[in-house]
Image (tube, rainbow, N blue to C red):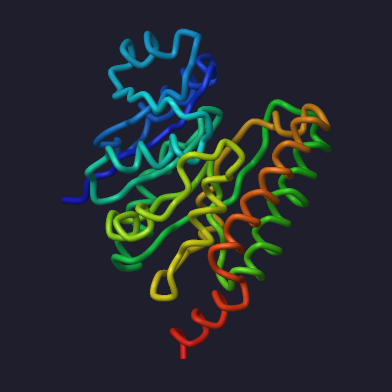
Length: 243
């Protein structure tokens, strides 16, 4: 039987985390393990995790990249899934993750789109269409395959065993999903499932400062990736593998 762990990096997000855990408790295919990676919270995250009966581990280095990696390392399951504290997975989400990866093979990641909530309707539409749509199309073109969306993706243990040692863990300005996406090797597949949708908070668009910080993180992440492996060399290696 396939085992699945859901990893949720979180810092001072207890109210949203409580709602996220309630959605995970309602899954038609329950998680075998839920790991909340506490990235230095000063709110009641610890008490919330204890009351919900989920595993909480502490990651002291600021930044979602290191926190996510620590959760993946701790999982020990056949599949590791990644969402955020503001994610609201539908009841069939984990079952669909399991089905997608079972059909695709051992070196596969699966991801899907997001639907924004708690913001004006126009802002949520723009976020879904331009922000996330641009991410999947523009970054996907650069990579030669779909990138994974940090609030909604999963991978096999075999994939993480190969990617994990190389991911960036000690820089707070790194987007973990972009880092993982860039490190996908030519023999790995990223499956984009349009039906694997995830409601997420529109808080990145609540202020220009918040949006600006996220865009700045994208620039910092790409700078780090390009320094390690140039994009043209990466695309060439992928084309050679396909041929």
